Image 1 (cartoon, rainbow, N blue to C red):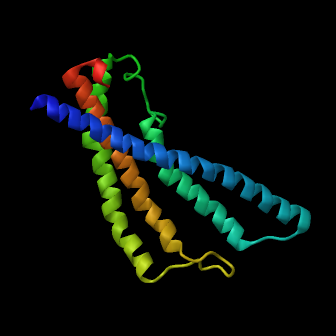
Image 2 (image 1 turned 90 degrees about the vertical axis):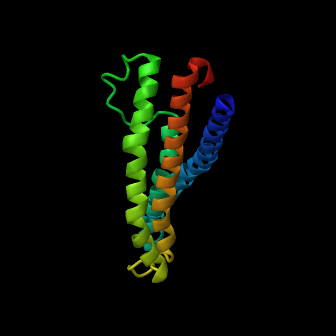
Length: 177
């Protein structure tokens, strides 16, 4: 029974990591698009005295999507900001315990809180088919706002995977993780 649960936990962790891996790699291409778009916008504004509200809004839309959807990928690779005064000097077992407790008692409740509070905000935006308030701005701002929920769901998925891998390290030793 215990072996089956460990195998299931490992499979679930790999599935969740795989989702964040695919989303992260796709979002990386948005960085290229954002760079090219920004360069074009700057060139158009300063060289040709031609600007576009839609282009400027698209820039911050892309940045928002990159930030929100890339956060789970960042957590998967442990590349997020961390104050690791104690963590860096801790044993592998202590780091696994810190990661497990941090995910269960800080990260996942925070993600749940953000998703829960954003739900009404996003639902309201969808119900009124919110668009840019600026003339020439982009339609469908509600789709961008939905990225808040999607982004935190991906961070939560990365947190569940991290918690599972940490629990496996604690239960089954270093060879499983």
